[in-house]
Image (cartoon, rainbow, N blue to C red; front, side, top):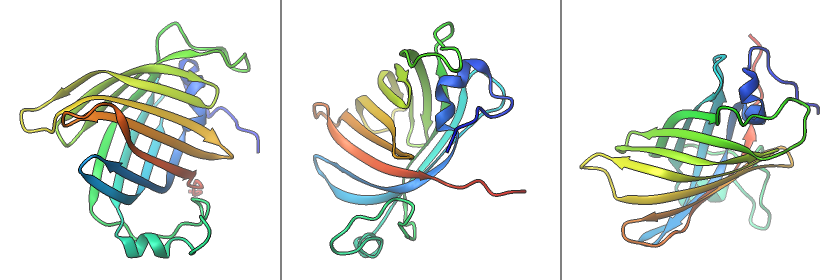
Length: 198
């Protein structure tokens, strides 16, 4: 299925156009002193005509019974087949994703690497600035700055990778926090939620 640039999207945001829409699906998180937990995530990338994408994401934990019910004993379903009932919120964030001014590629041009800036805020008391690159349907970003309130958990650095694989949005996050070195923290496989006519 061909992808069309949405009407009103600023040309500067074209390298990120493949992210637009709402994505939902399963994932897992684990970290030193955090037992592996299944979750479900919903992430929405939108635009308002500015040279950036708007972004919101919520992750809900699943209990083991819900996780097992979402898949068969011997096979892993695609994220479009997963059925779940969300439990407590584990994490939420919102912000803006923008190609760095002057670095955006022309539509229909080659898939050269474009510098990317991502600004995210979390209700847990963190505000982060990520820098990285987008090249075609692949993104790599890492924190340049993590600011926190006096009551927020200590997070030193975060590294994320996103990719569009077989029509699904795959992502993985490594984190250095609570005195631990950078190590894997979470990953997920999200399917695009079909837009409803209105």
